[in-house]
Image (cartoon, rainbow, N blue to C red):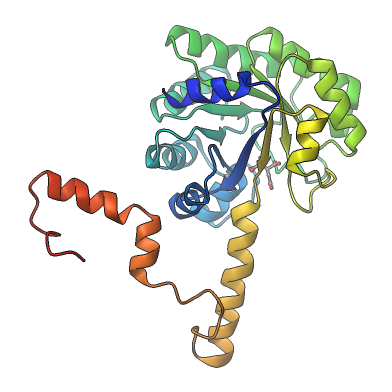
Length: 299
Ligand SMILES: C[C@](O)(C(=O)O)[C@H](CC(=O)O)C(=O)O
């Protein structure tokens, strides 16, 4: 089953919540696959930081995002990838190109939001949003492109309008997005569990996504609680980013302070062990099956 169809099947399962660790590159994707997750989330913030070394301020372009998403989606085609597509990177024509390219890249779902193109992380202050008509035209462009290509990519409509317009206007934007073809709703940055529960109830039967940003404006909600509240998807965008930050910072400090890294717990993985996380055995088997001679004696 193709990735988008698989994700749709998950969404159709009663009482199921799709749990997605946030990953930003091939290695963190592989580690999460090895941990047994059945779906992944490619964070735009993480893609911007890992590929460009820049903060989440609308700096990554369609090319940066699509290339990263395509590589990650290709690692295991059985595992659907939900990928951030920010604002769609322009007007309806650009949104159409984004959807087409994400589909070609094998992405199962993408989310599109109503911030201005020069956007920022949804958990920062003073976000600027576009008017509702412009937002709806982004979602319509996505749905039209999907129909034109006879695809089934899952369209997730995100609104960042809660911060400036309040709950009712934000939910009305999500309803307008659903009316023109969005499959899933995403209320960014809600600030109380009551609001989270309310939006699930109000938009039902449309599945609603919960963005669990550690240290963000949304209170901490566990997977079990989110399922109970009615969410169908939960993403943890900062999962790999914060782990990488903490462990690399500790290792760098250790090296700086002591001149070695072996003392840092967990840094003793051999090259071979970590290559195995990245499909070493399958890569060798593929080469050997084709008659390659490089790895017949092992590595
Ligand atoms: C979901 C998000 O768009 C992302 O890029 O992962 C961010 C998360 C973050 O910055 O931690 C967001 O705007 O919520």
